[in-house]
Every structure is written in structure tokens, then in C-alpha cells.
Length: 254
Length: 254
Image (cartoon, rainbow over all chains, first blue to last red; front, top):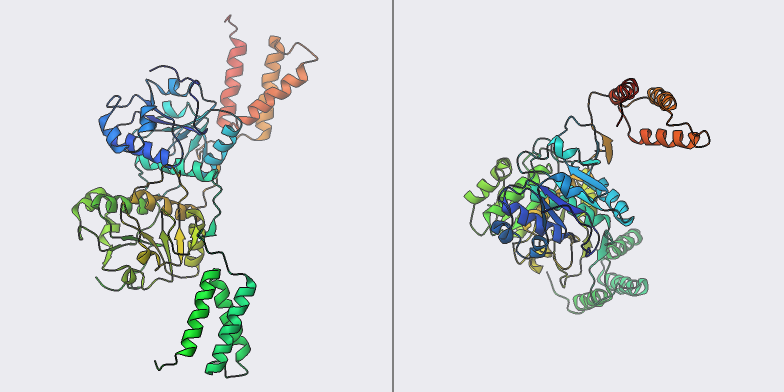
């Protein structure tokens, strides 16, 4: 226990998660897992109720032991944040202190900026049931409030750690919002699709499905639009050719 | 048990959360809490391992009983999604099916759109340890993958429900990203700030702090910029006037 030190190298830079007077070991363990899920690994504990190390925390952390093994313990919030240039304090309710309140998403964006500049950042989480006191909050330059259902806003501390860590992770995440599953088959080209349309329309003409000349253009367009939306792979287009061929060849009554 | 019905009125429209073959009652209870935290209340269960109702679920759900009390149980995924126009299936790993994969954030945005159009939407979550099978996934039009640390991506199902529900809630949330805590005191006007600057600069001139004429303009500007950044309330400006007054009046050696 002592003053926070800048000496330890970070795996990938990220905010320090600081649990203030955590009560249940299980919550510390679950918080460690949540952190690691989101690529964070630096945990500090201020005056944990049941001391440290904590067997219940270790059991609940299964797989995220590295976070607990490297966790630092402090007696006071002041000591835990001494080396940090920015501290964000999570709060569930509006307190008398006048502070700038940001959403978890905005905080993540700001933290990305600060850390990108090489600054050290920490996020404070309060004890279960009571949350951070004003004396804790005043160590922070920013308050963070997770927007939740006002009729049911009580969130387990490990879940709060998860949400804040998740926002951090997604603020730096480059995953495209939507993509096709990455498999061996590539998307069909428009030429391959046109061949499919031609095949389908020949077969439908031959079967009499498109016999109403006035309605034919619209029906053809609608079928093509439908098949375009399917965003077929080249493999699927070939499969569909087979479907048309066999349905046409092997006439049968339904 | 039976086919899903459209008959029940929704509190506020939102996606239906569907847990497929959930194993642990505690996870169902925690998922119910996570849903309610984010303003969701419609839960469906497909073939829960330990049957229904489930005492462990009820204990873990404490406070979120309304979600469990109204949960519907089905034998198959097909029956659970029968009345829905869109189904999003959460998946942790890439499977052989060719599906459109979106992030939780993109899914939330799409769901807001669908629900805004009056469509019924559901999100599938798989059993602990194994997740959804291909036979489950094929009931969905969209796959959802939460971007997590590839080295440590195993997430408890209740936490997955929390993250998806949270993205839903924030997609419709109007909380400004950053705001000043909402208290009785309003921000000081620029005129009130100017009065404060004038007071401070008079006191500093009288005390000799600004005696270097060439440096004075820059020092004055820097002090003003600092005080502007504090975003003082009108109350704080008045307090600061008192600080200046008393420091000036009651000269003492440090």
C-alpha cells in the first residue's frame, strides 16, 4: 500500500479502474472479468472491506486472474489517484457538488483523447448500496452518470464497470457497424446475378408464371430487387441456379 | 406454452429479449434486472433447463419481478419468434452460416427504426457455455456480435443482455453528452464574471502581484482564461468575491 506509481508498463494504455471501499469479493472478481472483456487490466482498490487478497474475488474472476494479481491497494482515494491527471467519478444520483456530468459514452471519448495525449486517467466506482460520497467525488474533475431507467436505476458495481469499460472499448473499436460474415465464398458479382435473373425469368416465362404481358415488367423488377436484397454469395447464386433447374426439369404437382 | 401472441400491451415499445435454453436461474434473474435497468420488460424463455417458474431466478431478479412475472415460456425458438418481423441473434463466434453481422450499437439503431415503424423485434441469446446453434441462428435475419477483447471474450449471458439492452436505451436517450449538474445555482453571466475579474485584478494590482508592466497583460489574460474554464455558477462567483476580499483585507504572512 502506498502512493500510486507510474512505474508499471501498460499492456495497452487505458483508464485505471478504481473501486472505492468495495464490499463483496464477488463484485471485485466480476469487475475484473468485465475489464478484461473490454481490454482493460489496471485495477486499484481503496480500502476493500474484506481486505486483500480476497478468495471470493479470485473465484469470481476466473480467467481474469491477471487483473487481480496486478491490482494495487490503497488506504485512501487521494493516494489512489495521486499520479493521475484526470479522474472521472461515477455517480448514480445528483449530489450537491457542482460538477460537469457526462454520459459514459462521452467520457469514453474524452478518455481516449486524454490517453492519446499520454495522460493518466482513472475512473472511480463507489461501494455497493451507497456509492461514492462527496469526499470521494471531489477528487474528480468529471462526473459520469450512466443514463438508465429512472424507475429502476440500481446497477451492480461490476455491471457499472462493464458498461464504462465497454464504452471505452467501443470508442476505439474499428469493427464496421455492419458486415457480411467472413467466409470463403465471396459476394456474387452483378454479372453473376444478372445471369441468375435471366435463368429465373426464362424458366418463369416457360412455366407461364409471367404470362400477363402488362404485369410482367413490374413482376420482373420486384423479383430482381428481392434477389438483390439477399446479397447472395457466388456460391449461393450457383445453388440457386440448381434450384431453378431442378424445379423446371422435374415438373410435379404440388 | 404456445405461440407468441401480439395481445399484450407494451409499456413502452422495445425489443423482446429471448433467452434460448437458459441454464442457470440466477442468470435469468440478472438478465431481468439488466432489462429493467434499460427500460425493457418483455422476456421470453425457450425451454429453460430448470423449468419455470424458477426460485433462483426470482431471488436474483429482486426488484425486477415484473419482468419475470410476465415472462412467456416456449418449447422452441420457432414458436417464440412466430409473431416477430425481425429477429437479431447474438453470436460470439463466426459460424458457417452466411449472415449479416452487426455491432450491438448498429443493431440498436436498426431496432429503433423497426420499432418506430410498428414492427415487432426480438433478440436471441443462447445458453451459457455453448451459445446459439446454427438451427437457432437461422430463425434470425441479423446476427449481432459484441466487439470484445479477442483474448478474453467470454461474457456471462446476463451481461450480454445488459450490453444489448444498454445500447437500445442509449440509442433513444436524449441525455446530453455533457452537462453541468442541475442545481439551484445558475451559471454566472459574463458580466458577473467580468466584475469578478475586475475585483481580482484590482486586488492583485494593489498587492503588487501584477507590478511587472510588460508581463501584466499576459498574466491577466491567463487568469481570466483559467477562471472562465471553471464555469463558475453565480453563487461561486459571489463566494470568490468573498475570498478575494478577505485575503486582501486580512493581510498576513504565509
